[in-house]
Length: 141
Image 1 (cartoon, rainbow, N blue to C red):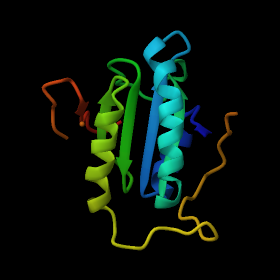
Image 2 (image 1 turned 180 degrees about the vertical axis):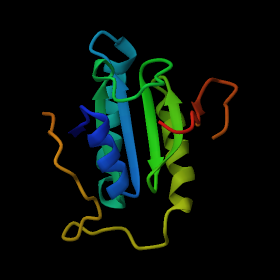
Image 3 (image 1 turned 45 degrees about the vertical axis):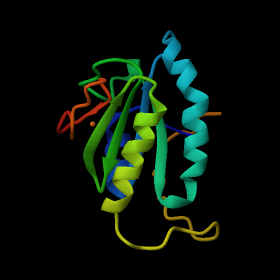
Image 4 (image 1 turned 90 degrees about the vertical axis):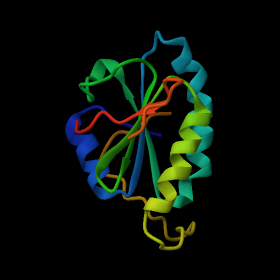
């Protein structure tokens, strides 16, 4: 899983990939800990689909507008698309289903030809408002 430590790394990642999903978390956050293995599993499911999953510790201050933890920021074609607040994987899956019709009609990458372009970052071992507080768009970073 990619670890984003600076705004420059984030900007490079979202400019070079069609879809980027970033989990903003904290070590002291219990919902963040519960989300982590599910987020990892989801990243494996979309690995060949051109989706880049990454994590960023909240104390790195890569994002200026974090409203709660965990926050999952979704970027499509270089632009902020949605933010999922909380550890609600169902909401994140809905967002991903909403994103995929918006990206190009190109076939998904194969194992030999991945479509993900990872910049030099370190590796680590909602536009609508939902009445349930689901995903929200906060505009530009």
